[in-house]
Length: 357
Image (cartoon, rainbow, N blue to C red; front, side, top):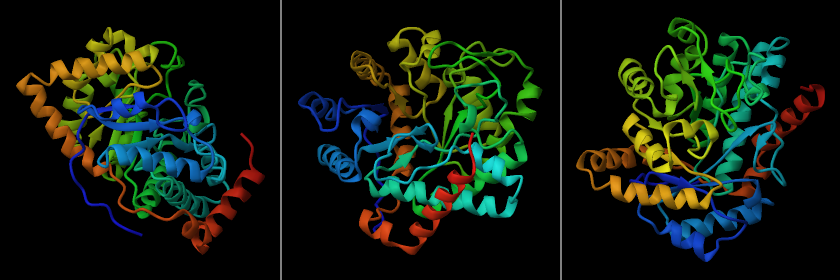
């Protein structure tokens, strides 16, 4: 396995591409200075060989670009054909009740296997893990959460992240400061959490606070916590600067959630969303599944970068983002032939066979 040298990433905008190969339009977009990342979705992906060809083609266009995917497990698993089927993380929470020590070890191994397969496919990182509490209220979170018990969640998520680090992948905790206690799906509506700050601190925020030493990045929720700020967390100076950076001392990367999501419209048009997310302290902005919105975000960044203050902030963000690069690059064939991969793969198959959610 080789180690990648850390150098700054060039831009703060993460976009998607059209299909399973690069189009000329995709290539033109990748050459734009402010584009620093690409996220792939199910439409971009078939078997491991195709994915590796695509990620290699993207790196041929921009060697320094960050490549990401959502590979949480369960229903949020973009890499499927030829990859290990990963359990929804709530399955670990259920298994913990029967075999706590064994389940913590398995969560660690699952984090390692997930990260190893994603790295072997040419990516830098998966946006994982979910640190939201399972409450039964939020369908969009649902079984993506490890547990309804904060201590169990913290134990399992910490093990999972240690496994990711062992494989050479940076971690991203989402959705700060907690999406599990609101019913609305922020992809489709604007969730509002009216609980007191103390309730949020004691419940949803606690996993983020306790897991902070293992977090390389955080993704805030497109949720308004009305007792703290009128803005969604991803556009909130209070949540991202006052609390996350200053009070908690977080020095890692802050990713926006997708600025095309319906809840993000509360910040205004795309130009306003880009500006507010940057001003709140986001290091990288995701604009996905809407090419017109991507071009609008890119045009906005070109204008905003002329401001000396924001230009300095963008430069600082680029150095933080460099820490999200893959630290190891396993070879697919060697990985699947290893005894470690075979053992963990077998254990996950057994877990899936004996549990349903």
